[in-house]
Image 1: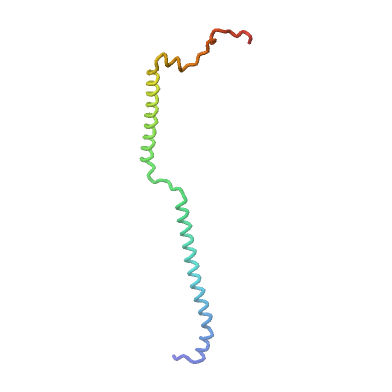
Image 2: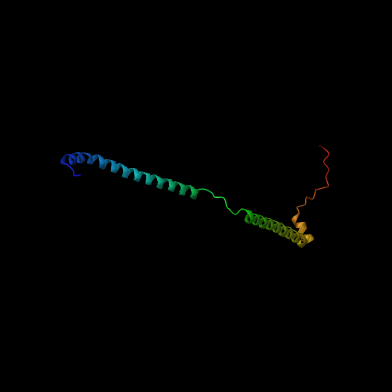
Amino acid sequence: MAIQPIDLQALFTQLDKVAKSQVIQREGQQIQEALQQAQSQRKLEQNVQSVNQSQQMGEEAATIKDEQRRGTNANQGRTMEKQEDEDEVLTPEEEERDFIRDPALGRNLDISG
């Protein structure tokens, strides 16, 4: 089947329409790719900014809490020991220096009120 000159004339007049439709298809694909990239970028930013819950909360959290409890108990024991040591070290003279005494304390009675 041969192509007649009249057929060529019809095809040449339609070439601009074909070219426009191909350009629109290419632009549509580029727009879709750009949208997909923007969505993936937003997801990545959300993942970076979000706080993720640890997957291994079980044993590790329990051991950390136990260690913290042991540490506070040990610190409390140490402070009690330090206080006891400080109390034992003071001589009676040092104790008298630490207290402020009023010479009139316990000698006067207030009967006015």
